[in-house]
Amino acid sequence: MRRLLMIGAVAAGAAAAGFYYKVRPWWKGWGVDPAEAELPLAGDELVPEPTVTDTRGITIDAPPSAIWPWLVQMGYGRGGWYSYDQLDMKGSSADTIVPGWQSISVGDTMPSFPGGGFAVKVVEPEKALVLYLDNKIIEAWRQTEDGVIETPTPGLAFAGAMGERSMPGAFVATWAFALMPQDDRRTRLIERFRLAFDGETPSSKISQPFMGFGVFVMMQRQMVGIRDRAEKLARQQGIPAIVPEAAPELDIEATPVETEQPAPEEATA
Image: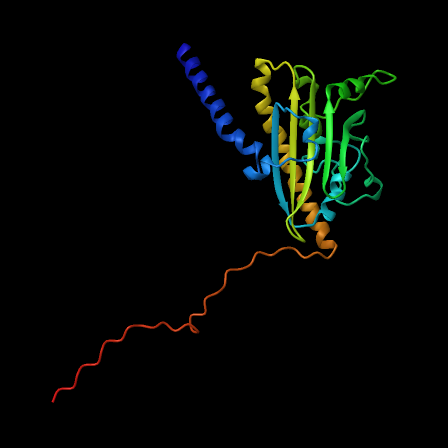
């Protein structure tokens, strides 16, 4: 029995090491190159010394004007989060642009559940949207008139800020969305999550990487959901999709192949 326990412990340690050194770097920087990961983005200054930083990206065959409306209308009870809705919210994420959800300003709340949500810190139309959460905002959720709030759903929005139960002490977190045009029809959507917290414990060191992977799964699905919706909207707006150029075909008949001919034999007398 003792031998089996030792084998199990070694296997678990190897699996944890493999996850930390192989899998973790992949999902923390999914879809971005090292240069993009180092780019300064709007909202970075709100968490100047992060404990955790994840930057991810995706290329969308659409201009920022076809992407921005989907970002503006995000939120619980609004357009949703375009991820795995059964884990994220009640109902389904919107597949259309809703005019009533297109107004957003600094100081607004982007709801993650009926009782509260992220504070909107940066709004640069068609360029950047930054959401913010800290332990003080979460505490304010509890200070309602009746003292009762609905428990947030354990999905993308709440887990993206790690939530109060995962933080050993005070924390601040930002969730930034940046739109970077590549040309007239193509845009890079970059998402960055920055988190700083106090009082890290041994248990939090173990749980955070695995929780982070769960957040990645939700966010990756979100970015794909935004891409698909934006590209569809761009087509509806008459913006043609980018079709990869096909490799040129070789015209064998039009390209004669020269071969070396043997020299003619000299005539003999």
